[in-house]
Image 1 (cartoon, rainbow, N blue to C red):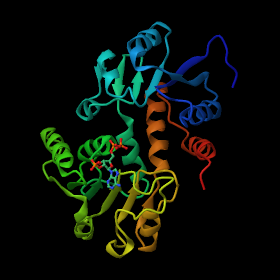
Image 2 (image 1 turned 135 degrees about the vertical axis):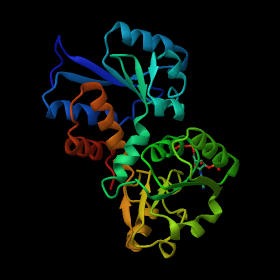
Image 3 (image 1 turned 120 degrees about the horizontal axis):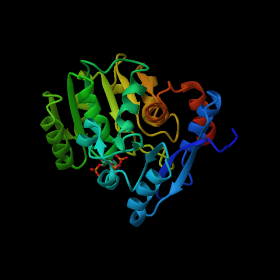
Image 4 (image 1 turned 180 degrees about the horizontal axis):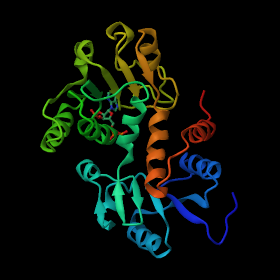
Length: 283
Ligand code: ATR
């Protein structure tokens, strides 16, 4: 892909950014569709965030992804925030056409799961109550799950998140509990989602949050951990005859959604997935 006088720029702001998988994934998509775009990563110190957004407006940059530590603070510098992103309280995508912020992390998880099953009317169990759980939980509510149960070590955090989700009025059937009770819940669960770092490299052999004997064949298990590609939790799901959904798919679909927001074109999923796998170089 040649950079020309006419090339449109999109990119990532974060701190740090040098290990991001997003530039190769998006640039592979632009190349495939022969689009005059380039995706670059900008390391932005938190004290320079406002200048970075104003500068991007001045430079006619088309779009940004936003990562740690800017996802919350960046909302101060936008003109408009998508409704669900507002509820989540974090933005990972900016469209400079209208200086509007979106959160495609949660959509990414829904789309990953929907490769296997629809989330509508399902009973969903989410382990963890941090940032990833928050983004995913509001989208589960928006996409019409029957019930949402959030389990966490720190139960107060799960209570608070469920309180916020209920306040949104996107769902009425939602509750929280201790993650120590996870095995009691799985029998009545259609979709289990792990948002905790349990099983993440280098702690790949740590005890998973649950094991195959508690799972059933109609269960879908999504692990937001993507390194390793196949976590111990997903191995347990396969052993039980349940359907695994790999964490890398969430990265893929959050990127695809951002791509579509910026360009208005359908994202070429297959090339993006191949580029993502090559970059992460995971076995
Ligand atoms: P992220 O942005 O990836 O969601 P986070 O906001 O730090 O990361 O949230 C991590 C979540 O994983 C939290 O819910 C955390 O539980 P606590 O709130 O009780 O700390 C959970 N978590 C982290 N390590 C865990 C472990 N070893 N077992 C169970 N839960 C764990």
